[in-house]
Amino acid sequence: SGRSEYNLRSPICCIMGHVDTGKTKLLDCIRGTNVQEGEAGGITQQIGATYFPAENIRKRTKELKADANLKVPGLLVIDTPGHESFASLRSRGSGLCDMAILVVDIMHRLERQTVESLNLLKMRNTNFVIALNKVDRLYGWKACDNASIVKAMKQQSRDVQSEFRMRLTQVVTEFKEQGINTELYYKNRDMGKGTFSIVPASAISGEGIPDLLLLLVQWTAKTMAERLTYSNEVQCTVLEVKVVEGHGTTIDVILVNGVLRDGDQIVVCGMQGPIVTSIRSLLTPDAMKELRVKGSYEHHKEIKAVQGIKITAQGLEHAITGTSLYVVGPDDDMEGIKEAVKGDMRSVMSRVDKCGEGVYVQASTLGSLEALLEFLKTPEVNIPVSGIGIGNVHKKDVTIASVMLEKKKEYATILAFDVTIAHDAKELADKVGVKIYTADIIYHLFNQFKAYIDNLKE
Ligand code: GDP
Ligand code: MG
View 1 (cartoon, rainbow, N blue to C red):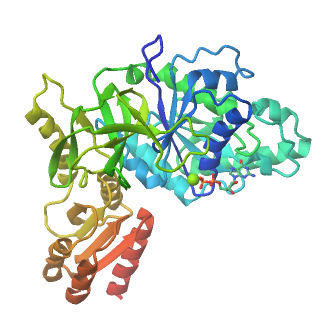
View 2 (view 1 turned 30 degrees about the horizontal axis):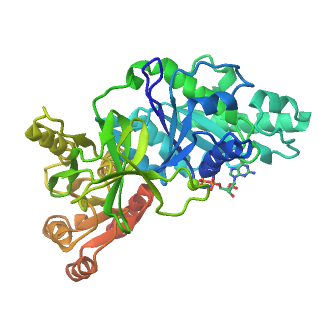
View 3 (view 1 turned 180 degrees about the vertical axis):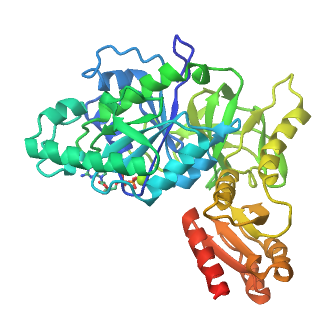
């Protein structure tokens, strides 16, 4: 990926929105067209992310702006599997993503997860652009493959243009109801000053994709020069912990700054404290394979930011996603690094109300736990928490939650987000009368719990 002459790193962007709005298809569209046009050059599918080199983006957007000076070496787009996981994408105390694309289906307008995504973006203070996707579904739309949206719109009949305007107005109104000002991006003079940009697009025929790419790259380079200045100091976030056949437990990371090398001594945050280990191999998906064989990886001696990387090493079984990875340099103080790792955990733990009465909250990652705690604290929800855990629910968690049976029975409850319940934990809970609610959407957990409380009150 390298660095540009401006010494900027590639911006990291994540794609969010309600299910089926076309997040994956948008990424496919950007990748696919380039392959079709024989311009695959350099686009690589990475671990949970896709890297688009500036050269590629320049070609793709030349009709909009010839010889655009992009200033950054490329763009890394993270395809977040669920919008909640965005909360766990953190780096040095703030969001990992420099920018986000919030995808809205023009036919469905704002949906529940659009609003949840908005709240997460606000919480992380992350800037975003809105991709108003599926414009090709407007009745009578004439496809203008990969054209800029202004050009494509000019080719449309009066009826299509007026349907577009009507639907756009509805979307703008719905955003306003959420307290968000929006405007078509090419009319938006207040981007970054409180008005968010809307880019109409189609992930099927590609209209608006050049606009989206150029806007993202130019906007980040223009307004985030400081944040994007490349640093040699390693900045790296654990995205996922996965068991891979032949490699044991591996971690997928996004390297934001610096260089990782084969054999580097690293420290990551674990359930039982800091994990000190050495990088056994640095892997990226095999770029040479057109139809990638699953589990086919390229090995690297060293990798420079920005990249998505799979790391194999010993002792990663209890690594926690959403936390930072540190490299121990020859002059570094190991104890200091361990303290920094522990700090990540402590900052979350310290948020729990120590008054002792409340539910027990269990989540899959540090980030999702934080998101859940923040959600439970909001005035509309307002559910007190007495204990927290990360990872699957075990007997010991049930035992802790059962303490509430004598204090406040309705709080003898575990709210479990995106985790599994061990069989013996379930048995114990049933026996002693601890309720366990599970969900993989935060909102559902709250609804279930609220229904239960309302039931008790009757
Ligand atoms: P995701 O859940 O947000 O990742 O949505 P997908 O990318 O899986 O898309 C959901 C469905 O919408 C699929 O059937 C896509 O083919 C379709 N789709 C996505 N983008 C567009 C678009 O721009 N136009 C049309 N007509 N269909 C689309
Ligand atoms: Mg998808």
